[in-house]
Length: 143
Image 1: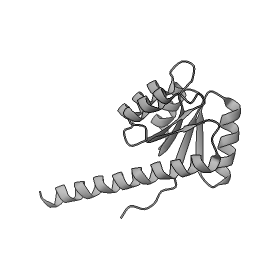
Image 2: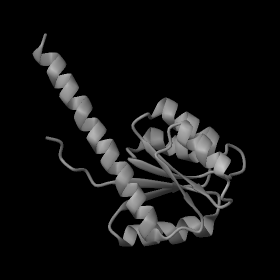
Image 3: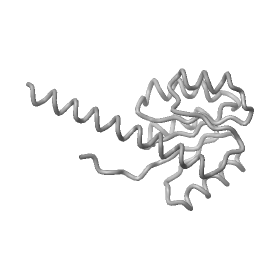
Image 4: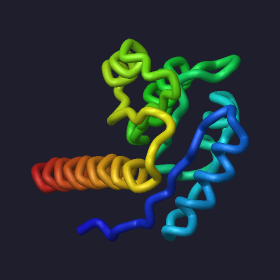
């Protein structure tokens, strides 16, 4: 049985005000929240800390959200990613989903919707981790 670990979320957006406001609102609900203002900073923090769900803005200067998503999925395949777009571009949402994003939200987003999607993504990850553990235990028992 897997013990439930408190969900840790990382918000990635180049808009500082959005990051600060959203981080405060999510933290008030009792969640651990990290922030990053770029794709590069996000990847650096993922190297240093266990993060369960990344909420990732699509449009950012430098490494955009889609490029960041590719790096996350290559290096941290268990991290669930929710794409966030302020420019309701269906193409970027579809591309993100094809590349392994769990879901997407459009900005401005309701904090309750954001938390609900993060919870869904986290539960998906926990279920996958349990399946992996069961498969590994089964493999060991047949050795």
